[in-house]
Image (cartoon, rainbow, N blue to C red; front, side):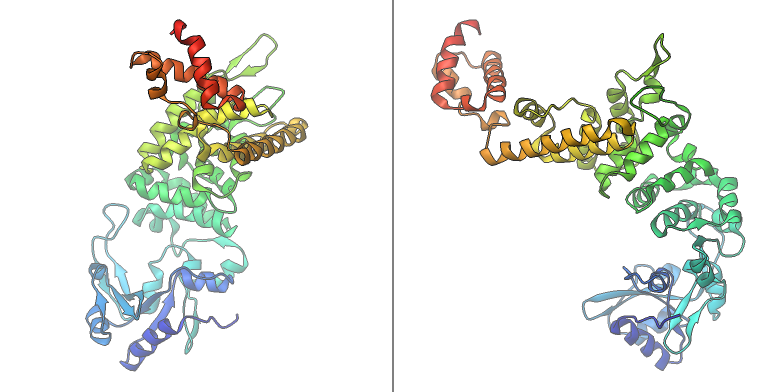
Length: 446
């Protein structure tokens, strides 16, 4: 194994603790990522020094996690978490230990961690400390629990989701005994907060391997965290435009869209209403009339339950509602859809429709992709020409109509709406004189 190079500020902390007679190592995810050739996001340090010793060793420290043995150490403008070797007490809430006790043994500290790939420590003097064969599991590309997998998940049920999330992010398989233990303890996930569940699912969805979402279903976790989705695995789509069941189609669309949280949640939920909307005609062909609105209602409930922020929910629901909208490669059609979804989401909608097509019958794919490319080209022309796309872009407003003699109120709004429809059909009509003249001709009808 190549030498792991950690930042000088981390080396400074380790060396200072060594000078005081204490052991200190980088530990966990930063070691794993370094072995994998990735740049770690955080550098965590574990030490035999007690929290009081750490505080005495360094000038600027913070006590936010001191209850569990963690002291935050400031080195110039950086903050590093330094945690004393510890043994966890009972986990009565399936999430965090009720108490911790400190130990002088690095091995005991590493034994309490979740997976072997996260249970390695390192410093320049000792090299890699790997009591649980995490390096071998990295070579085998597998996620394996430290010690007894069932015990690890009973201690902290979130670890079950983390196993699947790591599988997605690293492209690793989950070792059989570990996966079996997830299946056997899946019901414990109900003890985890919705926010933490959302964070893990979001990281899974935005990973390089979002198809690992299927592991949630096969492990039994899905029925506890997103039960509405389970029916998608049992809903066929006997329709010329589809060759996959609803779940297979959805996962393929998630894989086919950029790694944006908004876009991937949109694809995960865009057809979730299909199981409730399915009908079969006399020829045995399935139809899913109205599934868009059913999906919106279900997505609204799911996203609020998972505590997504309101702005993200609004964007996702808009894209779900219009994911199937017919857009023709004409300026008139594009302007009308732009007005419905908003300019900020129009290009995202095209990504959604492209991904949706990627998950359908490939016989129709090329034609659909050409059409979407045409739509994108025409949209750019519309933007370059500065054509009217909203009421606020119109050359006339309510005051102009009132000056023609219209009474303030509903009729003015109706007239503006009619004029706007005409402008969407014919952008050249967005001229104040032309619109005033048209309004004069129509005023008797309003």
